[in-house]
Length: 320
Image (cartoon, rainbow, N blue to C red; front, side):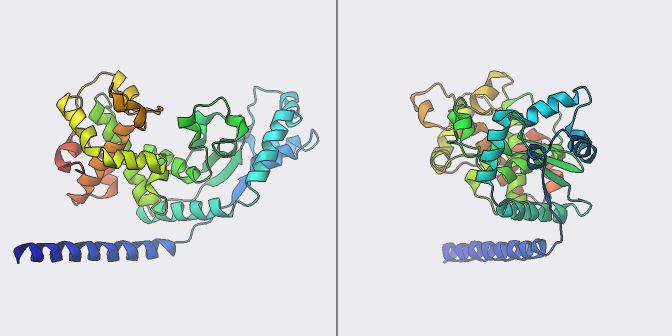
């Protein structure tokens, strides 16, 4: 009888939680935000030597004063630039889906931060500099759209698979959310493995809140199989970290093994080749989720919280 009562209480709590979340999402959907995607790469591709001065006047931040106009004109006529623009036009004949996702993301940002103002959103070509796919300031968001043509695109032939698997259109808003998260996280010391794990866990939880319309795979940048592997092996991963006393270890090599982008995580075991990279980020995500489930902290407070304190209060237990 007692077990049945406990089960009913859990069901009622979950039901109430779902109702609350549904109500919040309805409220968020009614928040008014304006998004206009400015196609700088298109304007640049269609410009000429005669129209260049106007383009520079309209987008002064896109033109470094240290370069002469002759360089920009040569770039307009460069065949590779023209081919990139052609491929972008072919891939993104319609930016409707991206605009809808941007609107939803900005609605969520505004709900949790009423002072938020939608920035100018500008797409451009950055010669596939995938380390700078998205740049965010208070008033401008730059999206290097040539980094999102699809992982199998010929332009990415020399780039490792574990990187280019996320050169997909659905990743744009996920990458954008990560940039916003980093600006709101206060965690000055990232010396230990747990520091790094919690830092990236905060980013991923921020995505849970701000882009709930995205799948967990898209939030963390895994394939479905990679996420399934992480879920199935969560307990073993945690056991590995704990038994080897790695959580508070400050060896910088640990970030390369478990945090940074990589084809697989480096346990130095036979299973390495089967594992996805960045499993430290994945476990950090679960730790932050556990903390938020077991506390009454709001999002802003959590993002500002000390990593060790958050971990100690999380009561995290891996899935069996």
